[in-house]
Length: 182
Image 1 (spheres, rainbow, N blue to C red):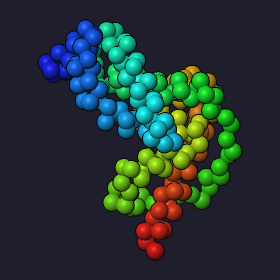
Image 2 (cartoon, rainbow, N blue to C red):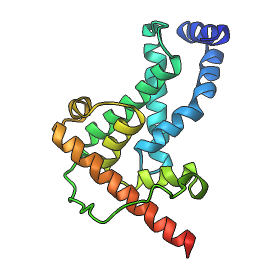
Image 3 (spheres, rainbow, N blue to C red):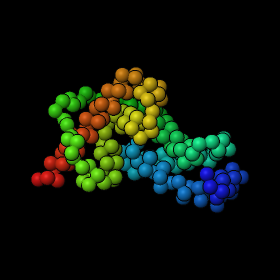
């Protein structure tokens, strides 16, 4: 952590508005990207971002200066997103998807045909439970047992939701590839 970050953190803890604004502007773009993956649209992501930063400022005094400060903020944002979905009871059972026959060849160059914005949009279109599990597993690195405990589902459901989310995304990629090569 740089000296300037430490000064900003100290200023935030002391209630300095200028330090709070600097911290927000330093991390908001990266955290917005995190929030966007958990939401269906920008407005929801902005609400989660604001709630997350409220918690960052409220609990900043508990940061122990061990590990990454950005990682600490990221964890707060993910928890804010999870809390939003728990409080809204958006986790409903979803229909099973037949993943048979959906395969993206290893030779398909996703990077040259898909930008980050398109990938986020594909993730945003996933059903809520699939989106949460996919993000927590793929981007945050949680294990299925941890995910199950976080969002109140069984470990098997977490595994199934991840598999189904991947199948949906693979199907979307296959469709995109067909459109590009046509």
